[in-house]
Image (cartoon, rainbow over all chains, first blue to last red; front, side, top):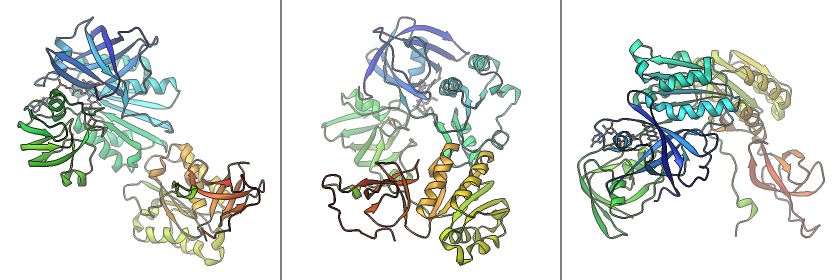
Length: 320
Length: 201
Ligand SMILES: Cc1cc2nc3c(=O)[nH]c(=O)nc-3n(C[C@H](O)[C@H](O)[C@H](O)COP(=O)(O)OP(=O)(O)OC[C@H]3O[C@@H](n4cnc5c(N)ncnc54)[C@H](O)[C@@H]3O)c2cc1C
Ligand code: FES
């Protein structure tokens, strides 16, 4: 609930986009148009797995011209806690889901003179929306998309169809690798780069950008961070007077929600800062997995991002 | 109670340092800003053969900063007769510059503001511009009533050079205009004007 206003949607269409990705068309259940969103936005999809709630963020690919539906793309993640598997196996046309209002942590920079979009694998979802927005604004842009092989190419075919020679494809199986050092020189001043994909790819592209002398202000990324599991521990919520157990495959935020406490969140991926919570005390070691707190804040042991971080120890006491 | 001058949007100038990663350095300097350039680049002499310096002596013409700068022997040194001509030259350079170029601005607050305002339309994020304030604390002020700009304002209140109203200089700074805001002090009781304060030397 504390992700803000919620919208009920019905699954109108499911498409097997690649061997491991399904695309879902989520239609407004009320018949009212869904909110307009800016490219780069995501919604948090809430799934009801037999009384157990799973909430995962998914980037919006597009909004239908009539405004009545959104599309999302979900990669099937094996060995997961279940959100993507639920979407792949349990959701069918007609299923009802609840989503939050779109939130954008990965916006295009309006003043940019040119935009270089880089996607790897499922990281293509926000990039797809960005390319469409830039095309409709007649802004200069180029798209670089790396994928495993031809079978992963539904997005690739559409990108080429929509953006023609502005798109460059790289296939892992053909040993085609995105070379930052070739992509970055000679871009006009005021170019902004956006990258979304696997962690290693993001880090390499950002490092390449700095090595090419790009200011950090022109380098943007989004990580599809999922809460890593770990050893179980207990969490005491001082204000609510509740103690709950955080299971090995559960995030701290999920355990707090399951205990009936309405905790704040927006991205559930360690990026937005919304879920920051004051740590009153702990026994053990805090495992910070977010990209929000500074190193000093992490070291201070007084704050934690409940969506992705946890405790390796016995008990954590939070000011909630 | 909050008074007008408590509202802080004054820019922060972190000081010039050479970005080792940059492929090209584009430096816009005015007046005593020359000294900031000399200090920063003397510490990174290897960068100079990839450096363009645009300099306008302005108020410190007699100090010989221009020869001291030229002695650094950068790849390109351009001496401009006025801030306006420097900005024209800067615009041409920005339009053909590529990413990997680091922009630097140093001199009076008004000059730095004008350089930042020139770079913004080229998609340059103002945080990425390295700046150092040197020289006079004079401000460039826009009258909120007639929109006229008055340069080198050193005291508040002052008389708008366009419409003649008595203006109080607010700490409210517009990055787009590169100017502070001036609002009429005696709008409620005409002629009741607080004493002039020499704030900005
Ligand atoms: C802003 C944002 C936008 C996103 N957009 C998209 C999108 O458009 N499309 C998309 O497919 N995904 C997107 N994601 C990722 C998505 O939210 C989910 O994280 C993803 O679908 C996996 O969810 P899951 O519940 O199936 O797996 P999770 O259980 O959350 O697992 C994800 C990963 O963690 C590992 N893991 C799980 N449990 C453990 C454990 N106990 N110990 C160690 N490792 C473990 C899994 O092996 C897996 O690799 C986005 C994420 C963010 C933050
Ligand atoms: S909800 Fe966004 S950082 Fe935790």
